Length: 305
Image (cartoon, helix red, strand yellow):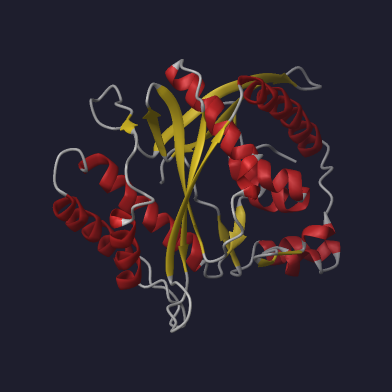
């Protein structure tokens, strides 16, 4: 199986690692074949628009009043919805997302208790792309493949004199923070921040944005924040573990050893988008993968928020 190298190097983000460590067949279809389902994903689309609105806030909040930067946020949301229309039965409409942003901006829980990290351009760092060198893998035919860990840092900040990374999570389900506390991506973002700034981060923070379909009962919009201190030894362990996984990824991809992990065919968010492919006889799978039911993966964390 051919690796998707760019200028001879391999770039791996959080999605690639998540798919490889849960189901290597899903990794094959998504990362190696670069195909994904054409089905609507309103949660992901609306989450991306929320990130875009927060980028506007982080760039402007230290220059102008809440009322002014909020107008700029609403303009950004409107422009995003010009290019995406949610399903008719979905509650994540433009007006609803504006309500979420307004509520976030005024939530006592989400008030700034930190100082923005200023980049070389003199602006607050937000939605910061990174591609940090991990290692070089020498293959059986003596090819050297440089490997980079890539992604985006939502909001690197200073709490006092400590460096933290603040990450936004939008969801309809309140499962608490447990799934993030030993998360490969979250600790990996700290490693990247360490390499980028040369300063050891103290930990990460999660801003949990709970938005649900408006109803007469319960809260439609709710916010929670959690800070998790991460020791240096855990970040160093992340690096060592990730390098081992990288070697496995390259070995398995070259050997076409990417079996299904059927325990993940259906998870808490529903069925795997590749389940229909995997249920077919092996000789028929490529045909469906290349059909109009799937499209090319265009997501790139170095270019998109």
